[in-house]
Amino acid sequence: MDLYEHQARELFARYGVLVPDAEVVDTPRAARLAAQRLGGRVVVKAQVKTGGRGKAGGVKLAVDPAAAELTARQMLGMDIKGHTVRKIMLAQPVGIDDEFYVSYVLDRAAGRFLAIASAEGGMGIEEVAATRPDAVARIPVDPAEGVTPAKAAEIAAAAQLPPETVPVLQQLWQVLVREDALLAEVNPLVRTDDGRILALDGKVTLDDNARFRQARWASEPSDPHTNPLEAAATAKGLNYVKLDGEVGVIGNGAGLVMSTLDVVAGCGARPANFLDIGGGASAQVMADGLAVILSDPAVKSVFVNVFGGITACDAVADGIVQALESVRLTRPLVVRLDGNAAARGRAILDDRAHPLVHQATTMDAAARRAAELADAA
Image (cartoon, rainbow, N blue to C red; front, top):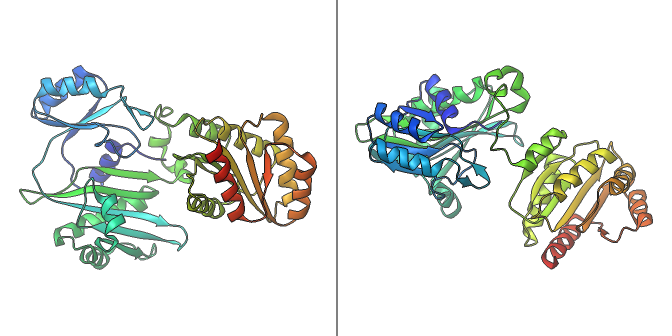
């Protein structure tokens, strides 16, 4: 469950992380009044649950309340990566001497958290991480130990952050563990020209499994910014994430799906989604998954990658065959079955002989075929 920037800032402030004064509004008139209360000159920031706002025109400086009202009029209703701006935040600007990046994220594979920090924060942090990975420190954090003063000092030293960021590293850790978060990120964390350490932007992702403890956020009305495909998948109980690609992906198990995304990308194609159907690849689950993926106009082919375990491959194949009776297949479907009862599963699909269903016995071969079919579409 992703939070908006203003919600993340609220959590930061609750745990002692300093943030500039700000107000959230949803009309141009309210923006003018908020700017007046904040001192006139403000930063206007679109509130959407996606990155890249600055480059998309979703972050602008307004020199006075009239400019704030005009900027709000231009920004409200605009589209940023499929997210409609319905609220904006106006924040007091600050003089910046240095920008840093700090975050904590759950490392599921290692069963621990990971602190990621850099002395080079701001809009270019992705490029820094890609071109100069040595400039980004990655420090494991034992959940049982947490971020003690010594651990915070270790993270700051590894990332070449100034000593005054050490308390912030401890405070941000408290946001993570006390609010059931999977991600707590500040970018940029800045040192102002008067020596303060402030969080200018933030991202927080809460664990969906902790919704019963996070009633304040979970009880909010449905998010109008949610991608409609993700909303449809959630309504069907599917673990689906929309991506910017052309090869739809269905797999059983998050690890297998993540590997599938990498293999598809390695074949020169882009995955269109993450969809984990878990252990229950029933006909209804398959039908629901295919219906969501095929409703994405960007999808040119679909890759179903299943390793049979408790749910055998013949049961998965039966599910696919039954799903094809209720879902009109309009794009090629590549299926790779392996593991328990894989041979029987392949035979079931061969007997069905659907003209748009293709099979491959290895993940690499299936990914190549899905990529080729997408390219030819």
